[in-house]
Image (cartoon, rainbow, N blue to C red):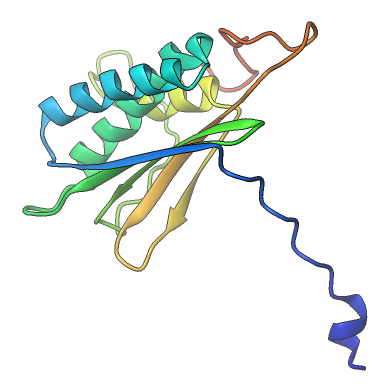
Length: 163
């Protein structure tokens, strides 16, 4: 038995997916609006109406970023929703891997630059995953259940100011 075999730890078993949906969009402003409405409708249909607004906002921000910073002419971006027993995962994939998203402080006179700050404050977890072609930016919302974990708007988490 090798040392690697002696200390290997099995990977945790992923949660079973209860619901899943994905759709590819053309990189246009209308696609962002459509993906936002579609997400809100699906999350409500999946039994989590209290998360529909947050999910729609997250999709809107991530899809807008894909449009502004990840679009390549003739290539689509994908919105992928996954529901497990504990998490709603929203993932937006685009074809451009050279431009990774970063949190930054927008100045007061800038019209853009606050989207990821909103994502970081609303999502329970978010990040970037490289792909063979492009990248996926995801945000996850924990499904709060029981009297001590209500479903609905989340408290703002400590972090840098959005002003």
